[in-house]
Image 1 (spheres, rainbow, N blue to C red):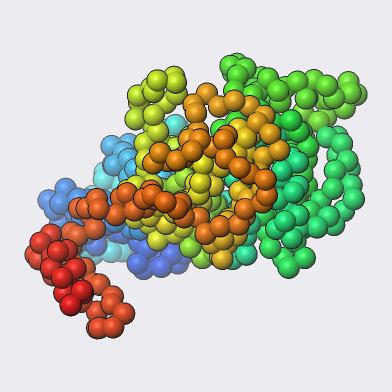
Image 2: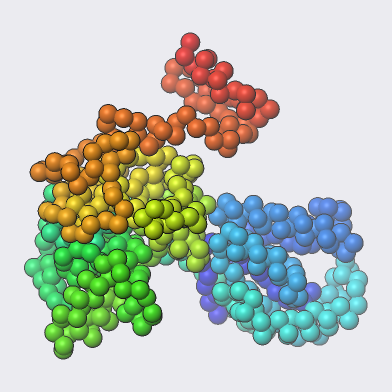
Length: 509
């Protein structure tokens, strides 16, 4: 039997004493990946069989598991785990750290487990304990999936256990091996004229004159130097050529010349095509009108193609060895490279404060102001008049459909390339004005493509606005400051909070 599960998982071994859990763990996992309840008993009491130390041992076990999962490390729990109450804390850990739950059940006969225990002098408890373990395990088999285990594997004989092959699979969002270079493109919203112009300006060329599809024939683009486009979602709604945009991006994804993450508008269209009851607003009516205008004999198959394509999109990607993350609405550091419903929702919608502004729109929480992750995060979703780096994050949705421009970020060059919108296709519900008192976006002169460094001019940028804000996490703990002309400066934890001003004075002298 092949046991397959994602690379970031909490693997829970379940079985009676004597079923061979520890032996199985040692055969298939690294010693550092295994957390044994017996070992934790030994840590707290010097006796691995001291049942009086069980509560303290499991506190240690859960703490170590939390630290490993928080660091993104696969973790294996070697304990009996035959009762729901013993599994509950592990389920909570998996939810907290957005990990997949895997149950590997060793359901061996009671007599075999008893015979094995009799051969171990350190296991001096009676057969009634094993009988209780086996009974609890049998009851657990019916409820593991309902408890939240995503993968459940049951092994019922020593032969099955010996034949097991364990395979770890990368998460779908793990594309760390893909280093690009990339051209990351903001929200298109059906502005296919501007998209084609932007691709040409970035150096992409047509490699196929047509691509057979029920959506109709459409060319496929590729870059002669092997660069790859990355689309940040919201392909549909509001613009004049929505289906053309879908065809173009779909062709590039299928040809592996592009990646694409979904936007909230794309997922709303998918839900509508799947028969869900959604509100027809914010440009969805234009997308549905284009679909309705297709010839009758093609419409059903075209809808099927759209559904398949949108349903295949991954919420976010981690690229270039973990140095780059792309998502429609952004991605916090603790969410990157993980998978859960909450993380997918954040990728699609970001985070709101629960308040509504004067335009009837949700007030968005500025997660980027608190971002301290190592990876650069490139996202869209909220239209901005200019691209600005903030704490190694950047929003490149520059409101093309609202009369702004369509922007791409060339990575790793960190150069922005833009083409202006041909016209205002849709009036925004909320006016898009230049930050810090600059001219409204729709009144700007945009007669030519723009290439810039991404920094606003004239007034403080968003990054500069937050440079004077002290984040307590930036000064807590031991700090090592690298300097250009002197050796590294180490600031001890007890001196961390009072040190920033002194450090500035020291560095300036």
